[in-house]
Image 1 (cartoon, helix red, strand yellow):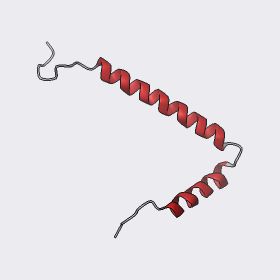
Image 2 (spheres, rainbow, N blue to C red):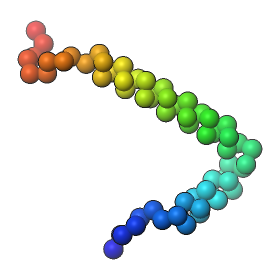
Image 3 (tube, rainbow, N blue to C red):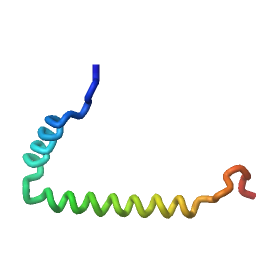
Length: 61
């Protein structure tokens, strides 16, 4: 049924749809904002992992 769900031509169609929807002038700004959001998400998840209690076997008092 579904062997290769995402083939190279799917990516080309997807890129073409983004260019048509958002225009070529807005795409760099959108990509920059997405990258910034991903960096923030990564730093926040790292901070959550560092703040998490190390011993999960004992309940908190």
